[in-house]
Amino acid sequence: MDILIFISSFLFVINFGFSQDRFTTQRKDMVRNQLKTRQIVDKATLNAMLAVPRHVFVPNNAQKHAYDDRPLSIGKGQTISQPYIVAFMTQELRLKPEHKVLEIGTGSGYQAAVLAEIVKEVFTIEIIESLGQIAKRRLEKLGYQNVKIRLGDGYHGWKEEAPFDAIIVTAGIKSIPEPLLDQLAEGGRMIIPAGPEAAMQLLLVTKINGKIKTKKRLPVRFVPFIRGKN
View 1 (tube, helix red, strand yellow):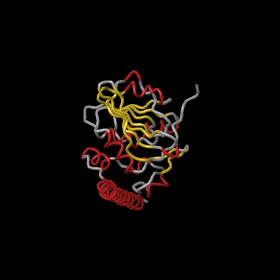
View 2 (cartoon, helix red, strand yellow):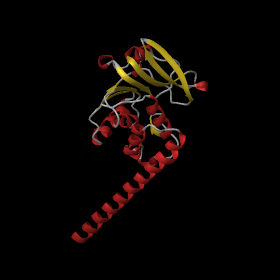
View 3 (cartoon, rainbow, N blue to C red):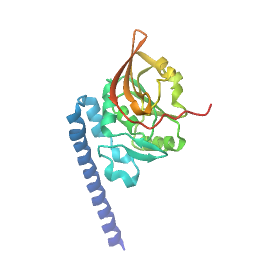
View 4 (cartoon, rainbow, N blue to C red):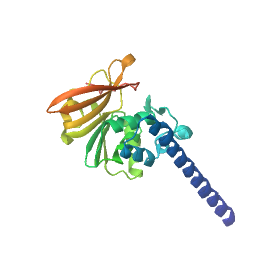
């Protein structure tokens, strides 16, 4: 019996190591083939995408597709965005290590983990309680102590922690929420998918001398922004 237990444990270690090596290889391929070839050049963004184990943030039955060039369902009608979109949005924020970032739409927690690899503090809000709880446990297990999660309506932001050097919104909305504009720091940058569903654009929003400027960056499709009950 002891021999059988030893053999079983040995095989588990071998299989686990093989699985981790496979995912590491897939992650390197993702960065090289999906990101670097499409003008993702920011070193901090590339390093973060290489560091975060994307397969941990998707359902077990989808792990084999974790590094594919596409979004994946995470349940509750929500998705984890395509790796390129995650990297593009992150790069657009021009993040620095000392920055404080607000994310609206925690989802799986993957984008928050990517941000946490780069900046000092990440504040993230998720309106779907079950997803928020899972993301919280996942991020804690992975050791991301610089991420704080709130359950609730992200439309109003996180006023008591404002201002934020950067804000990222991961759900499509018709117009930019005023509270988020108010909570953006002077010189800050926001990336947000906004506009009508059929013509949604990633907008880069900057605040310079108190004035808001917006610039269209990419046509995109995102899951709808969910509001709380009034």
